[in-house]
Length: 167
Image (tube, rainbow, N blue to C red):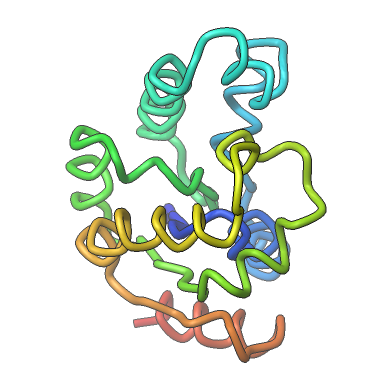
């Protein structure tokens, strides 16, 4: 089985993905980390040196590389749903989970991070709200279940996910 986690930045996809992979004894992959490894540089540097379009292409390549993987949990980047080819890929998968989070919670989780290139251009809360509005329908379209992260602890989140996976 392959489990994909989608949702906005700062929602907790990577943390939840690592926790889930340990719980179900699957390997864990993070598309951002796959890109950084392939490129030999940080996401922030890719954005600065080559731009967002280049990064989005690398993101599609990283997603495509997961085709042959089995027994894995894959955390995707927040913007992976912007490209139609990625949405079509994810729509074909059975276990895509939308980890939803309010822009306010996203802001609290990202406000001290300097590795989020889309948040270096002004009012971060406003940017997060606009990205959320722009991408929300895409997250819903590709996912089979939505879990609101705002008021749940780690165990409650894992329980909801595992209940979904057991169906």
